[in-house]
Image (cartoon, rainbow, N blue to C red; front, side, top):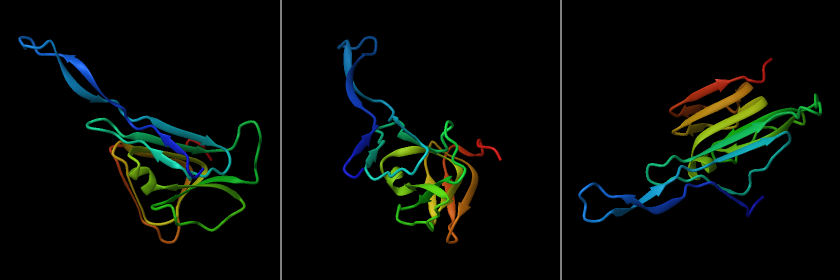
Length: 171
């Protein structure tokens, strides 16, 4: 919801580390940072990502990981509606409404600007790119769906140390 905050940014702390042999002091203060955490959202219906989200790193620490999985519940069959993740660079581009799908819109700029450097999107039926998008996530990008689709002549660039295009949903 608007006004909410999910923050998995790294933590930084000054710690005492044993000094080198022969040093005149037994310990020296050193700033150390943990890697940022993971936000993992699993949903079976439309989800709004309207609040603030952070996964910032510090120093040589890794930024956060963001994972979104949108699939049908295993205990309730829902053959009339598919699951679709709509990817937009800035979050404003949309695809035509389709009552045959339950949608979640993801803004690439929002995630990258919040410090996330690993992205995983899984949609049971489709991942749709609503506009030109550059998915630049240093630690990698995973796109898992039966179908990847671009609309409006969108051009999609994916940059990362790892890239996985998967269809773990079959069919």
